Length: 147
Image (tube, rainbow, N blue to C red; front, side):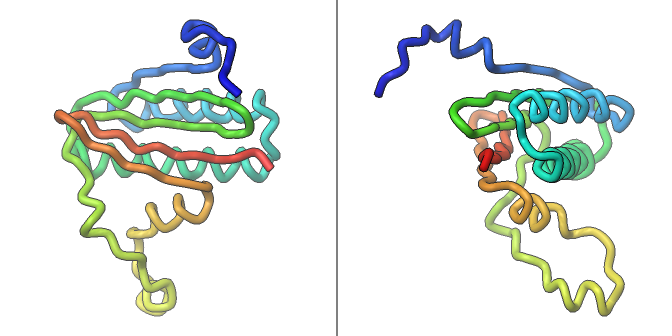
């Protein structure tokens, strides 16, 4: 059934925030994500998982896409039906998804290896993760459905 809402009305459920790629601004974006998920009536466990996934995605962007240099991350949050969609948009170095392989958890524990769990964690905490890259603009999209 098509929506009777205008594009402007649909955008009323969408929030945007642009932060510098500095760790000190990450809590601002995370607070918005947490508040938005809470207002969308997600469970406390889901809110924790969403927040953790977004935190990890932002850390990866700052560390790998910008290599701790200055830049910006735009967060876009929307909720429609029962689906929360969080997009993190940047113009740093793109992520090469073809080079990703799931970590061997047992080996990591045995060797006490640190790092390398971010994408694995996000994939297991969120319902879907998408990555797009076009004309120098890169976007990771985290999706969580309300059960």
